[in-house]
Amino acid sequence: MSDAKALLILHGKQALNDEVREAVRQQRELGWELAVRVTWEPGDAQRLVLDGLAAGYPLLIAGGGDGTLREVAEAMLDAKTDASLALMPLGSANDFAKAAGISLDPFEALALLDEPAQAVDVGEMNGQAFFNMATGGFGSRVTATTSEELKRFLGGGAYLLTGLTRFSEIHSARGRFSGPGFEWEGEFLALGIGNGRQAGGGQLLCPQATVNDGLLDVCIVPAPADAVGTLGTLLSGGLLGVETVSISARLPWLEVEAPKAIDINLDGEPFSGATLRFGVRPGALRMHLPADSPLLSRPDAGRR
Picture 1: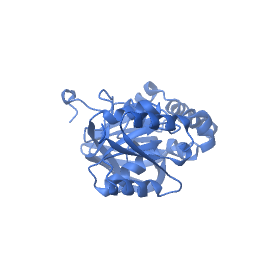
Picture 2: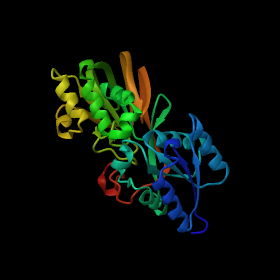
Picture 3: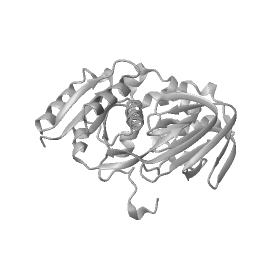
Picture 4: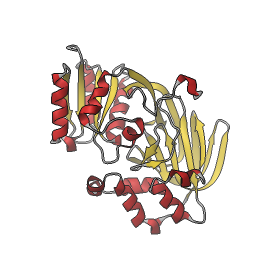
């Protein structure tokens, strides 16, 4: 495996992570030429992707959370590269990794470098790429306002705690949703547009989503009279309760129009807008995933 080489683009907060250092050492002992570059400020991930591609690395590894994965993936898309992508999940929630079956152990995650790369989809909203999920409504504000310190101590549970402390601020948004064979208009508490299945530290909004079906899974949680109870179920990851009240669809694109700007979170990056168009780029990147990953649809599953 002397010709195997990869570049790990590591989030700066993980620069002193001993587990990562040991995983890199072990991977090199297995014959991999594994270089490491660390981000310091906004824009570094994109720059390091370009540097890595220019240096001839055929495989890039995003070392961080869902936000780091999105940044690296977006830069690779912009570069129109044939290089493949892997993930070393080091975030506080690691929603994509957990849904995909990627180990949270750094060395075990690197073992996926030996798995064949699979063509995977990438979502987009008004031209902005997202790899895991776009969320909207009150839940997205919880994700955006949860402090880094709280996430560091509580991991995904930090989102639930933040949501519980902000129940007094709950209010719905209104929107009109349209896509091929799908129309819905009304007040809603939460919205999930999934390439992956979960967001916000374990909110399983799109439990059937896969990353290679050329479609986005849509989950809309309408605003009922018992808004607090419904959102409590959502924030605590109670799928059964959400399924009983949510509206779902699987679409190649979705347009949203709202009288007021809707808060949207793309893999941890906050946005807002009153006119939104979501779409998918089928098979836009190649990614190293477990062969039995739940996020990979099978040819006999009838999902294409």
